[in-house]
Length: 214
Image (cartoon, rainbow, N blue to C red; front, side):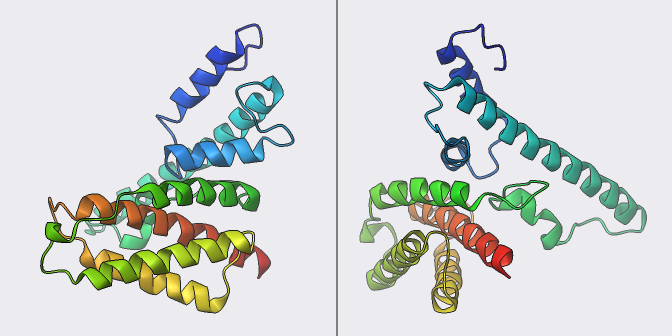
């Protein structure tokens, strides 16, 4: 990817392949993050320097991630020796939820781009057919969808911020979506899990902005 003698299209494809192995925000959200933080020329298909900057950003994050995983493995060895066979949920959160590992605070611009990318995808997700789960009140699904849409719109309109009311609304919405998911296979999960992934990204992004400002 760093060999500037190669055609830019090959280097661009190689970077996208790298995201197949490491994409802490999910593939598309990570690509949007990298594109935004490669400013001032974020078109990675045409700008060699921007492509190199994106690669450097990804490599730095992956190095931090690997160091965190090494530290986690070390703690687990000690805990297992002490008889604790199951890790705490807080210890595995970094593996289950979107997060941008970095030695410095994540880029708010990058996170806004990631949320905007996934917000567009969220708006295109087909709405679940009420017949998929007759035990679920259709109005409840519609309410959760509208609340998540409102939270995302507030975040993007405020350029990466959520006020306390919107943050509380987002937390309740995440709980509401999670409460409707079912263990194992459920046709409704095909929709709800996509909502939940977007909601988790939005929660993380808004939390980063709050932490930076406070």
